[in-house]
Length: 235
Image (cartoon, rainbow, N blue to C red; front, top):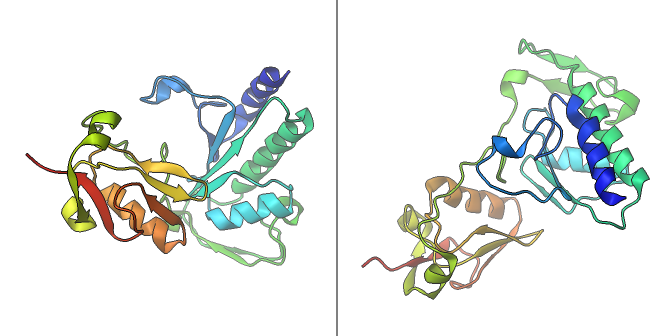
């Protein structure tokens, strides 16, 4: 059945070296500071590769015919369910292993190299491309937890924070204050800030970066998508 399909996926991706899949393969729940994981959610992190998010998304769409629920930073989210076919999960496994093997062609000494016409990636995954890449110049910014982001501090409960009195502050003023609202990012429509969370400089910079990338941010109490956020009033 479906659960067995996910177990097979888990075993087969243990050979991945550059790609990571949250709580699958060699990445285990005990390696993280959360207590539970829904194994049907396949979160692929490629921070250890040369790929940019939009490039990898296009390759997976054009070459392998996969459309993911979310791509943000160097993370891709695939959501599985009992209705999924075994062939689809097998194809995703093969795609990840092939892309991971291709990444091994980049030397680890930081020397620049130039490869033409798809010779870098097997089967012309990037066609007619001229790749100039240095391992030491790889970007390692990932906007989504769990990779590349420091978990936020939850100061109070969601309910208490959401019911607290507050005021709208600019992002500069809001640093180290406590959020009194949810902030959702579309797509895919997930909360990236929750009530009761201490707003670090990192999380506020991430909001700005998401907007610059064209993502729509929805603020549940302050309303408008501007550089403002609703924070608990200090007493």
